[in-house]
Length: 305
Image (cartoon, rainbow, N blue to C red; front, top):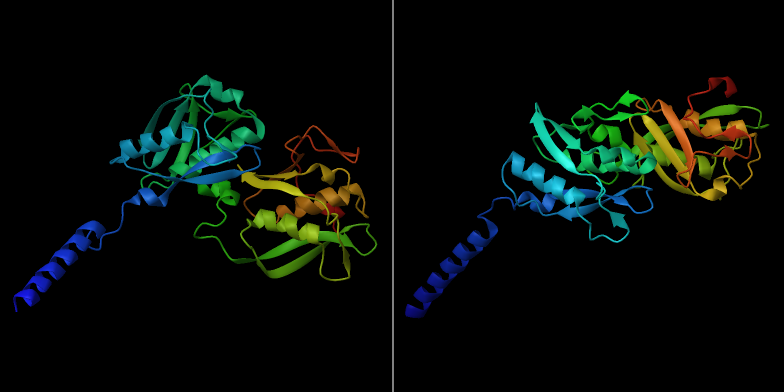
């Protein structure tokens, strides 16, 4: 009887201890559910590193994440989103808009690195329940890129960097522009229920163009040997960065059809206004010594039959 009583006591003790360790059914600390976004060292995208968010309160959590964005990341091939030359001078939070102020050295970052820096900061900070969007200022003044003030941004501005997270569609419908049978014009082709397979919609479009059409009444505009480094959308501009063989692989259709098959297909997406094509991050190039890549492209429906 005494042994049975002792067993019951031990059982109750184990239950109480288990309950204490597990928080009695409460959710675990949110520190395991946060990620710090960092920039891939080749500037062809962003990656995530699991964050330990231990601070309490809005200010504490903001400061902790901003600090981690400036620190060297343990992930191989990944660098801190905010370069060491750039200082975070302060921040403010109003109506769920977080404004982060940077030192003037922010303007020393340019091109793809600057876009990825913004992407990483925004995607990191909007994970906080009390932050809906992030605005950048430099020395207290709004960030200006290419003569335009950059408005407050949220995850929608960087949708292509959100692949794999909850909320992404598994399948989508596409309108793609291949060449017609004789290669003289672009032909609109619709594809239904295309699996994303972990890609953003923009990446999927480029992938499908490289794969070529399924039906024989259209021609591929891109060689299936063409390699893509990254596809990133920032501020309604889709940046498609190809590997060098984009410039050497020869298509069977005219150069302008190659370029505008990419541009017109991507611009079927309602939240994208322009397409910038680069090769290893360089836009100071000509496609087959014919078409300049220096400026973003807009839709050209004159080439569509």
